[in-house]
Image (tube, rainbow, N blue to C red; front, top):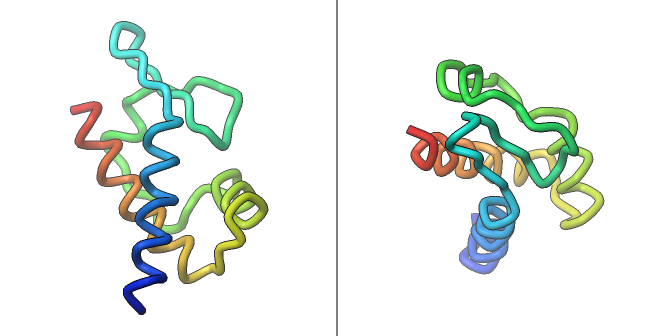
Length: 86
């Protein structure tokens, strides 16, 4: 991966993290690519083998990412959010 590409993808991750709403009292999370709050539990205890379809659709349309770039963004985003809700 080229440096400029990585910088761009890291910015996308940063935007996704910034736009994620975490409600620690309710133990729920609202992703920027969804309009529904989700419980922390599945997100904490499971790792998805592939990015959620809502995320794929969102980042392809908003940021123009390829499938390979989406994999990178999802892994980075997932790790950051898991750290934030632990």
